[in-house]
Image: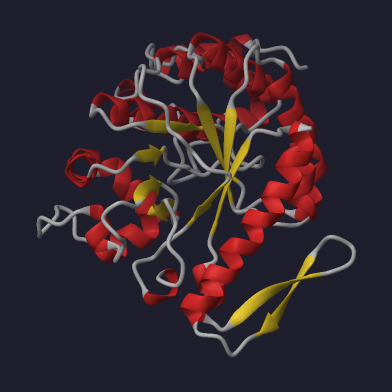
Length: 338
């Protein structure tokens, strides 16, 4: 583990720019070259920006420990959460609990809401279906979520989803450290805003460097949440071994079971490896695009899945795909429990 203390030059730079930056020491730990961009880099959070202080001030600094989770009712999450898009492909097989991503939800409504309809009505679902919202989507949409957060929060409050998974602001290992820490802080801060509105919420957990894992362990120790979420859509194959090692480190520091809600993985070897590290999981995946293109997942002997064509209607295919991954998860999770 690298030292969390930055250089005197880096600390002075941040302190002079903005005393609200309560985690200024964290930037220097990546080395000055990777800590803050120079003035010539545009569009990146940096101490020389005129609005640097206000941007950090509106989230209360970079320390995620400043956000405390509020008590809430149990989430009652199943092993698999089908994603829905409001189209015909999701009508083939009913599910008790589903999720819709922010990107798909934006296509189904205007912000502010123009008509008073339930979330189930907007997504062509039966009235009794439980619906969660996963705040993931393209970066411009997530920035709109942030800049117009009061409007979006009003919309979520009106829709009354059964739960909301906090936003996933992009964090890349080759980003400047300050930018990555700001993205993580915004995600946790938005989780707090959701809870303030009385919406059952799940915090999105992610890190830029291994050192951030210790901070998350402290946050989880101080905030006994039932579940956390991770968006793994952009997890590359070569990154999987490192990610699994770091995930195991995060779990090793927990004193109680915590459910992990995973987006972006489906039945196959990568999910198998993740379950071996973190057995208490809920998986959500986009299956309606596959079904809408008249394709299905075909299991291979090595545990992976290929894709094949089908003449079945999209609704039927979607139901078959959901049933397949539910069976797959039941077999894996049952084995882990045993």
